[in-house]
Image 1 (cartoon, rainbow, N blue to C red):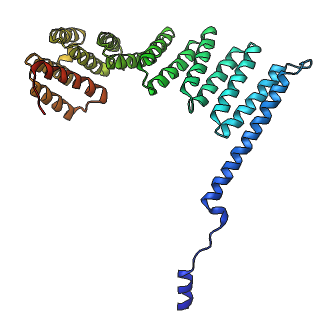
Image 2 (image 1 turned 180 degrees about the vertical axis):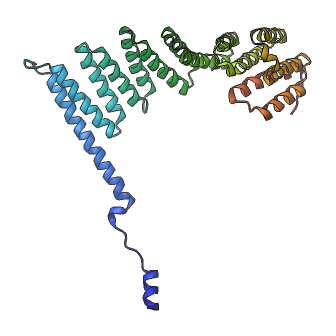
Image 3 (image 1 turned 45 degrees about the vertical axis):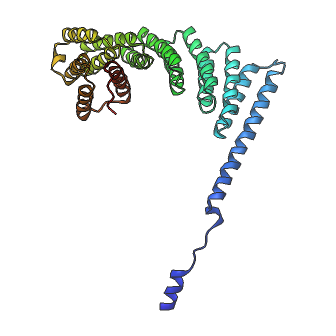
Length: 318
């Protein structure tokens, strides 16, 4: 029994070839190849249908059905460019049928495939979708895809275009009285405007959203944050008087603001700038950050203010 136990203990377990990772990968590759083959077949049938005389039935309807099947097959094969191009062909069929809603959706599907490979193609398809939804008066859908365009530019760090499309998104949502979504896009505009040193634009947006929020019990809690953002943008302008005036304005707007840490933070920063005291400025920022961690956007702007203050005072703390 002892020797048998040892032999069982040290016996090498047999490994089935089916459980090897390489085999599983090969099966996936075969499946993807099969889907591409299917997609090719559907696409060829669709093109043949379009080139036919079309005496019986509507050739564009039949082609649309085949293109949709082809696009799905290419998606399953993760052949994103092929899928995107096929969805565009599907959209064109729907346009021939005067089915604008289906065409707009097909362009959006194409964009979602192109997002994985070609941001520019994705943007082009989303713009087609936006324009069609605008023609139909479907402003909510147009806003939704406008926002996707803005987010692609955002991910590409093209802030000017991101601002333009977030502004358009906000306008569309606002026209449908979807104020929360509109303000979310406006905050993006303010955020990137400040990064591009367009401080007055950012200030106007933050102050306006703060004013709106005061009249909404669910949004009142965010007022101090919007005013803090506006105040930091004032600091970036390098004019202490404008900061002081802004703080007075904010107290009139919201009498409770004076008792907040955000108000004290802005007031102390303004005082340190007026005194040209970089060390004091740094201490004020560190103290606030220890209680309420500053996000990357605020940190970036405050570093700009600090660098400007150092240049004015000719102080090198390093």
